Length: 114
Length: 113
Image (cartoon, chains in turn cyan, red):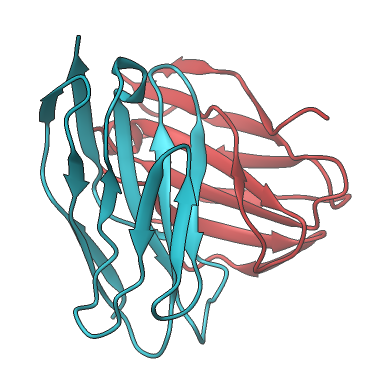
């Protein structure tokens, strides 16, 4: 079946540090891949997405590359800020049946200290 | 324009009570989704509407859960005879079409005592 596995948190970094949050997936065909972010007290927001192999999604300094060969979609940012503290969810939508259905990982909490 | 709104934001219910959770999608969005998010977990799909038609209800955990969208806009998720395991955040999302970006509401946090 389809599933998403992401690294457990919390991840604690100092401001301006480099961030990587690992995400791998299991799916048939070519799913679309997403990173959503949930800031404290707010709803889920789409951060970035990629819909085919080797695509790079980017937004607000974050980026992730769709790697079919390693079934991965790791989230990176070169220099994190305190305001990036949030919970990050990796997700996919299947390429075939139920292509509308978002399947999420369990989330990774990021805490950035000043 | 306005985003997806949900009400109530918080709901405390006694075990065995019925609850109704409301979702107002973004105007003009054809597709509407409900997800359940347990504490410390990612959201899990419950059900999907295209306009007023419920096309997928495979994620509803039991027949105590029922969702409707009678006029193709506002949706209600009803849980009958609530149990403690129903305690979770219930998220609603809408999209312009079924494979477009899903926009999420703030969620309703349900606590069953």
